[in-house]
Each structure stands twice: as C-alpha cells, then as structure tokens.
Picture (cartoon, rainbow, N blue to C red):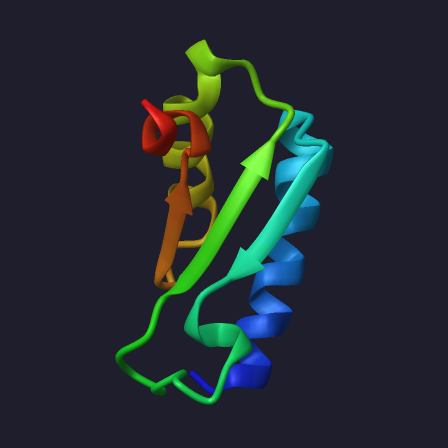
Length: 82
C-alpha cells in the first residue's frame, strides 16, 4: 500500500467511524503522514473521539471487520494517560 492509498483508506475509515458509530473526531497519525511510511510494513494509525468509553473496543473491532484488507491500528488516549 502506498502512502497515498493509506491516506485515502484513512479518509474512508474516518467517514465510517463518524457515520456508523458517531465519532466526532478522527485523526491520522504516525508514519502514514511522514517519509517513514514503508509500503507493505507500515500500518494506518488512527485516533478517534466521540464514542463512549464502554463502546470503544467494540467500535474498534467492528472497524477492523469492516476494513479487513487494511492494516489498521486504533489508539485510545484515555488508556495512554492512565
């Protein structure tokens, strides 16, 4: 996957998270935004907000299932800050 395809995939996933699960903010971060992106090795790092804490893991799992051909990784800021 090229960096351009990773960015397009991130836009599609962001739209899915917003329309299907009520996410209010979705951010792409990591190597997909930099020259460190390595096709075939790098994943698509996404952070999302606006989904209740008790639904975050389920929503992440449904997102992985909705986009099985994409190497996605989600990030939970609350877990990182605890």
